[in-house]
Image 1 (spheres, rainbow, N blue to C red):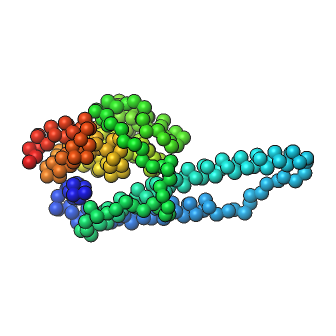
Image 2 (cartoon, one colour; image 1 turned 45 degrees about the vertical axis):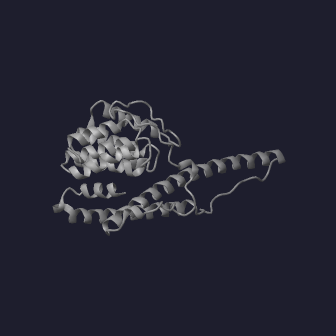
Image 3 (cartoon, rainbow, N blue to C red; image 1 turned 60 degrees about the vertical axis):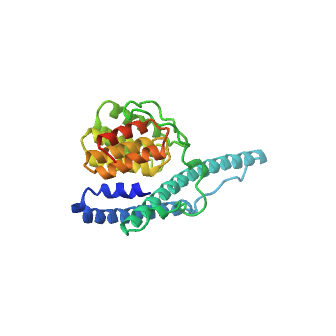
Length: 283
């Protein structure tokens, strides 16, 4: 975890802005805690009865009453499954946010971020099996040439794949401003979804295309932090190191680029990271 702390400090971009960065981060922590509280309140409302439900099964023959009850049972089963999927998404997103908050708070207090264990699931219990991270697959060699259909399509919401492909198309067409906005909106619309880390990664590509290297580095860090062992983690780590080098944060860039080979020895981005380290004259 040493490199994660160095990267986070590097993204503060110098001692002059360090105090302002800490204040901003604490404000972000308070804001995210408020968002989590709102999501929990929404879940509680979902689990509260309105008292207006009723099933009319009187009158008619026995067969008609049985058919009415079967129809109502099917409706309730469908509604239950819909609510379960929504709750699973909230739990996954909330757990990821809590883990990020824990890391940032320990970092701000000067603690050892390496001692942080696995974040407890929001609300207790185990992470829903349908929302578990997907098995890592090899990352694409070229971040801008990968315009194929996403391979990680488990548990996609309605319209999620379409919105993701639309944003990727804007990136491929060189419409960086539109692509950056669409990817940002995508992760707000589908928080905790399986395509979230790649959406952050591609948002970083779009911001880099706009010349906003600082925000691109933050997007790459968000992508890697969301799923450090996922299918795009190696690419996100490489792009983060490259961005830090472009920002003049040579020490942080060298550490980050060195982690690519340590964490993903078989990734095609290892060679690119080593080449970038040579350019930066890393020791």
